[in-house]
Length: 294
Image 1 (cartoon, rainbow, N blue to C red):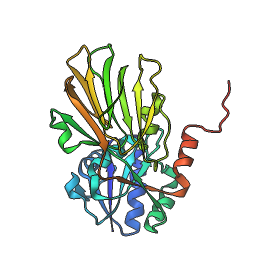
Image 2 (cartoon, one colour):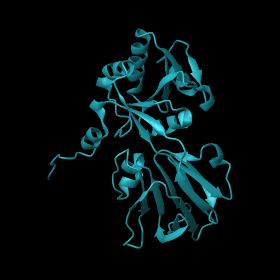
Image 3 (cartoon, rainbow, N blue to C red):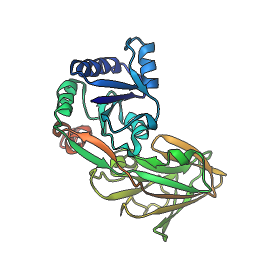
Image 4 (cartoon, helix red, strand yellow):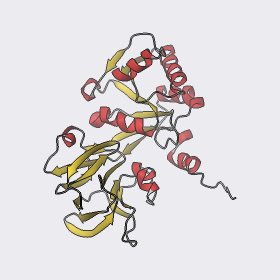
């Protein structure tokens, strides 16, 4: 059995987490394969001194891996998804960040929940992704044309609003006058979209959310649509470029670019344990039921 380990950032808690995870798997005779740059940073800080097999891209992973363990925050899992793509390797997130809607395993639960992984005592949550096509095509979107959380279009070099003419399955919806527009998956509904007033969706809902960012037309509200719709965006404004972000990957494109967004043909598998379910996570992270009055 092989386990892939991935981490994007080094934080104070990362050393203890890595040591716990490595000790657990080596005690259970599980083969560990590190992402190459993550292992290099751990060696540089003397957190890891031994040599391990490594992977550096999507092609180095295969179905022999039982899971990919992401050590960090939710952003680290978004990055991990670019290595997994359609390989169907499930991802587990160990939280070394802050909120952790995706990276739900906490430090104190590492060993018992990893034991449940080995015992196959878990559930798989299939997460929708979004794919992006642009006209004209841009090189940045050819290999990494998908997003687990959201696709966002936004103004670039100006404080002026942009106009985002929006179509659903070829039918005109509306024109948003705003700082930008977020198209979110259910997974991303607890992220940027939520901070802009969008609703929280449970992960298995077959829907997407369109959320305007600081809209000037005040009657513009977040809209929930079925995830089989194709969304077309045409952006205009005073500047020659605007930004497109796929999760944390950002590119500048010309304002005459047409952006088409639809559900990707593959999903990402997230491992869930009943102790750290989605409902339990949002209840804790969003303080639902906690009466915190001044």
